[in-house]
Structure formats: structure tokens, C-alpha cells
Image (cartoon, rainbow, N blue to C red; front, top):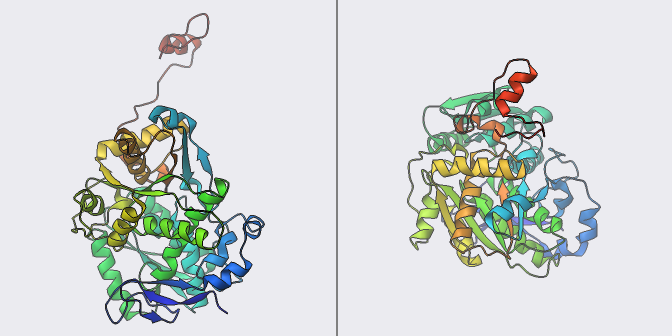
Length: 416
């Protein structure tokens, strides 16, 4: 029996075949994959996972692909770093950084979701892959399409960071800059998806694509010695990543891979685009769309598709949400780099900034096993911190100039 039973509407429960569809024709609710957990439970085990490939595909039993050929063979299994220095600074005994700044091939967590999406798109017979993106997704789609020999169209806002634009062009897809923000890009792509037989990973392939985010939960649990953390802090754009980490944790319990789920799910946004966090703090179960204005462009989705479900998951877990200013984003990037040697993009600054707030508020306790998800590499958003890190010390090519600049004494101590 197939491990995928159907696509099911998250609102009314109507089921559909596992094809390239993403919206319920009855109530227009979003669709997600429904699995045959009883069949999966017969074969899955901790040992089988541990004996699998060093990538997301060690969890293939819980991903919406038929196999056995998987594209994106190196995505995932990124380090879970014990952040002793940052933990000491914040007053946390057991803080971890899930470090997707080194994910393969494009240095963000999007390599996970795209590997799943493009594999499923190929299984469904598509030859062209496409996406609407705030940057990282476009990079990953372009790279995976190049490796798979597929045509690619990536649609991005016209004000994207230069490194992310270059990170598309190098793979030679069709890069389309749209005059507008991400929500404008997404609306256009929805129209195009209705007219052309392309696999838009975050539109008609979205039910499969989103499942790739669960692998962050799976890896975290495995790397913690098959236990769930007490607290997680997750950056939010559409809200999908947060909801899928929550889903992934509960799948592991349902399959007997962990004993319980004790995790509180905490969401993080930038103040300039915080519709989900604003709703949560106001005690609402719905959000109001906003026009993004923040340096955290990878999170700049003013009308988040999974906002409602992110609010629901956080409430169910008894977690929290908060937001940080652009200045706090920069400080978060610097703090992570200077304590743990990890250079994160702006979304990482949002995560660290909100983590710091939640600790100060007492929401995250000293003894909590806490995981902060860092989803992209800082080399992609250098503009955000270029004015905040100073300049190199410039000296003459002489020992005297060096020692004078750094006030080096006879004991070799530098005062600068």
C-alpha cells in the first residue's frame, strides 16, 4: 500500500488524489499530504533512519515522494551546535543552534523543501520548475533545476539583495524581477501557474514542498539523542516552517520514535513585517495583512499563507511569538557571529533577537533545552550589517606600525 493516502483539505477534510493541486475545490482551503501511518510504522525505526544516507532522504519514509530516485541528494543533516558561549551570555544551560547556514547546495533551509518538491515534480512528469521567492527559494530552485537538467523560472521582487540575485543568475535559469513586493510576485505566479503546465514549488506543488521542512524537526530529535526539545524558536515568513516542525515532532511520536512531545513552539518576525506575531500578541486567531518594510527580506511576506496555522500550532504548544526591530536584527546577527562563529542572514538575526527577548521575559527558562533555527547564510545579506561591523585596521608594512596600532607591549598583549 502507498505511504501517501491522499491530499486532504486542512479546513473541510475533503480528499484528493496526490497530483499537482493545492487548493480545495469545495471550500478553497489549503491541501496537505495525508499519510498511511499504519503502513509506515511497520518498517520505520531509529536504526533504519540512522543507517540511511547523510541527508534528508534518511527520512524518505515520512516524505511525499515515491522513490527510489531522489533529487537533491545532499540536502540536510546540518549541524546541531551546542551554543555554550551564546547560552552563557543569555543565561541558558542547554542552548542549541540548528545551523542551516551550511545546507547544500545553496546555504539555506530551502534546499530541504526544494529537494522534496523537485523530486515530486519529476515523478509527476513536469519538465519545468518555477517559484515565487523572497530570495533563498529562488537560489535553491535554480541550483536544483541545473543539477536535474530541468528548465527553471524564478520570480523575485525587484529590490532583492545583490548576493541573492547573483545566486540565481549563476545557474542560468530564467530570472524574472517583478516590480513589487513578494505578495505581488506570488499573485502573478498564481496566475501563470493556472495557464502553464509548470511545477511551481510553492503553488501547485506546495503540499509536497512544505513537507520538506519537517526534516528540521526529525534531525533535531535524532541529534538530541531521540528526545524533543523543551523550546524552539523559528523564524516566520509564510508560517509554513513553524507548522511543519510542529507536525514533524508529532509524527515522530505517532510512529514511536520518541516518547512524547514536550516542545513549546515560538515564532519570530521582524517588526516591519509581523502580521502573525502581532495577531498572537493581540490574542487573535487571525492576522491582518501588512505591507512589508524590513531589512529581513527573506521573511517579508505581508499576507502569509500559513499564518492561521502558525498561530494555531503555537497556541496548541503553549508557546509564544514576538518581533524585533531592524536594529535588533543586526544586533542578533552580530551576537551569533561573535559568540558562536556562525554568520547568519537577516532571518537568523530575527531568530536570535526574539530568542533574547523570550529569555528576558522569562518565557524561556534557564534549564529549558532550547533550539534556535538559523535558516540562511549571512553572505547572502551582507548589506544589512556592512555599516555595523567597522573597518579593518590599516597599517604600514612594518613591525613598529603593527605594535603601535595594537599597543603591543613586551608581553605581547594587545590593547585594541
